[in-house]
Length: 163
Image (cartoon, rainbow, N blue to C red; front, side, top):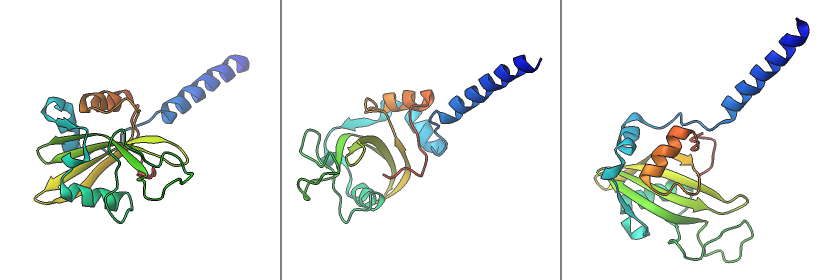
């Protein structure tokens, strides 16, 4: 009996750790989740010009930058932590999605570890507020793919992650 119980407990321990190790979306506001679930209403762009001024200010605050700094897709940017040119942004836009009062910014971040992020802002008048952020898979650059990545657990919105 003792020999059978040990392997069973070991398998249960491994299964529990695997479940805890998978990414979880625990901080996504219900209103934003509903908007993402209705993905066809978002307008997509691949230009920083599509980012409203209020969102630019909120993004700069969120990323702890003095001013908005996000390279255009395909433009030069600071990919690694080895600084070649201090004037280059540390982040590069992949896509922007806008819908009513929500703006989602899909971007990649350079540095010690190249990573992919999404930040969601709620726009009200000319002001914007960060309502959600997450680390995401590289290929998740549309709202539909984001919705699928959220449901599959590929997106992680643990607030400990730096923007």
